Image 1 (cartoon, one colour):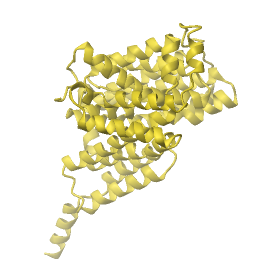
Image 2 (image 1 turned 45 degrees about the vertical axis):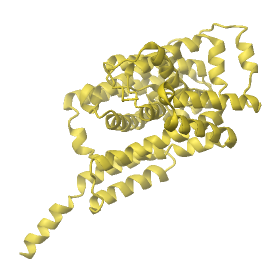
Image 3 (image 1 turned 120 degrees about the vertical axis):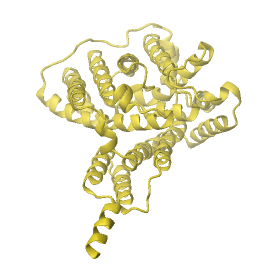
Image 4 (image 1 turned 180 degrees about the vertical axis):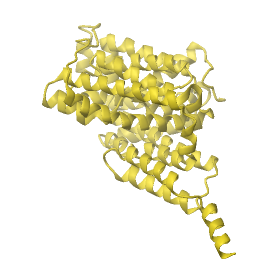
Length: 406
């Protein structure tokens, strides 16, 4: 099947399964964050759908991205929710992240975004994109290690359908793999059906218990707001990936400032319902890269289904019952595709690694991005940008030496 570009729409008979595929791709990680921090998974699912709609509206549907729960805030949320039982403080912190994004948006609007391509050339962007995917691979391996038989089976189905699938099956390999993995896990007794059965007793529920729970907690603001820098850099890296695979400069149209504003308002909206900070998701970008279907319409469908499922208890329970190993098998290939997209960026830009400047920049980014366990992508990106700005091009240095010798 040929590529389907951002503005194109497939018939609903094809678009809906593609939207469901995006939903399945992000669900595991989106509900994992609240499960780890003591918040409601259904609230997170609801907030991700609302946040994605806000994001798509503000970017004019020109950025095919889904917004899900950010892992960067797990530590901060755990302290306020599990340790202190302080929901109001946590939500104040989440709101402060959204406000920080809005402030950054105004700065970008004031000074423009054209400088991004100069400050972040392909050697920097490609390396950062690669480590975004590669730095997530330990998470994928940890998920898969819950049951390697199920994970490898799911991964194998995704690969085989992606390569050898015919017709429509070729563009929904992730969905097919998750269903196949789920069935195998069911027969192996790994699917907990008790919550699914219990969900039918109360089929419709509100996905949130409180609205607008805040308090003026300065500590929460100082804890959460600075972490916005991490998700900001994640967004920038993801826009580089999307620009690469769609062959459109999304940092210029609709503009990275619109991306930042969309993420900020989405996170602010999540805080109103007791959700977690949101960020663009690598899992869904991986789906785009594999299927070559970049239509934003499919992300709209995924968002509305996510909202609907958050109200309908049984279907939500089924999705939340997907074993971790099944999602582990899927994200192995999705995260790997992100890493490969970074390498593709540098290959297509003809980055010359015979030049020491390029070699050093890539080496430092890879070392820091993969080596550092905490916020490695952020530090690696900052280091790469800094080195690009201070190191001279080798041709300039050679030219200067030649003149001195003459």
